[in-house]
Image: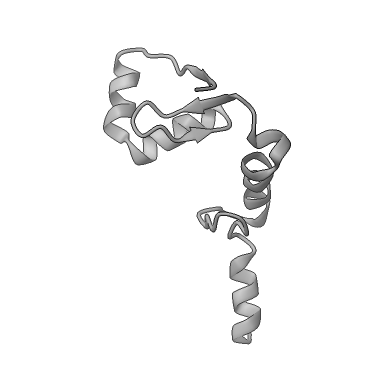
Length: 91
């Protein structure tokens, strides 16, 4: 496989807009791109905000995944306290 072909294959899972590259496959990247960068969807106010760092994600599952991977201690504490994830509606 040539370097160019190898590079093209690798880039299929990298978001062309923000450069995020932790997707398992091209489908995951395309879903991310539509939800995060499609203007009609990106301006939604019903996103979930991380209580630790403020990152906003599109789904409750996305926030759960983010918390468990990036802030495991916060995630464990929220789970032990029986906390519910809250939807953020604008600033």
